Length: 172
Image (cartoon, rainbow, N blue to C red; front, side, top):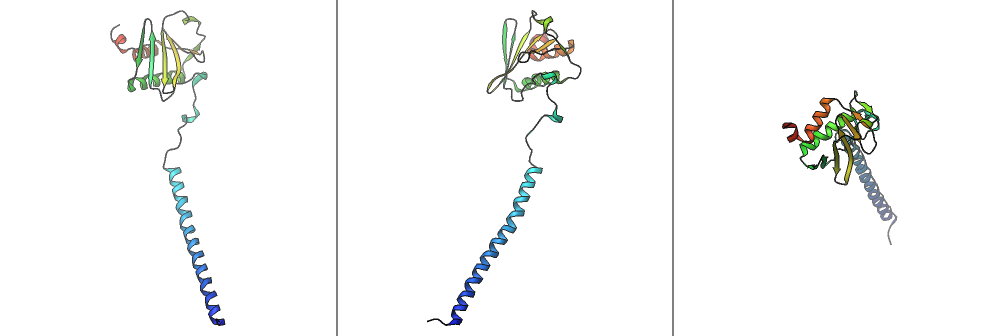
């Protein structure tokens, strides 16, 4: 049979073991919580977040601006179809269309003056399929989805025609 002192020693030893285990767990939590907070703060401050439109600027007058992920542009002109897959030309065309949609001096026209005129149909394709369709006739750019027609200056129209068909612009 065990003596009273042996029992007390056993209880004290078990108690010390529980206390050490509890202290170790508290130390682990005390080290991990600041570490997790530092990692979270770093990821929020340093890593880029989802990109949104700058200053909340949307398309002008409800016209849809071209999507950033355009992979191909088809240009249908009088008697010809041209597919543009060069990334630099695609970027230049989409940037020009976006600038025209967001230009502060652009005027909206009713689109009736260019209904019968010959022009180009510009179809922007994303990996998911056709994204936006524009009709360019003389000095009018029409968004086929919304029906909005924008009057362009001669310079804007010539610049867009030159981007769409550089060979024709070089040989007038």
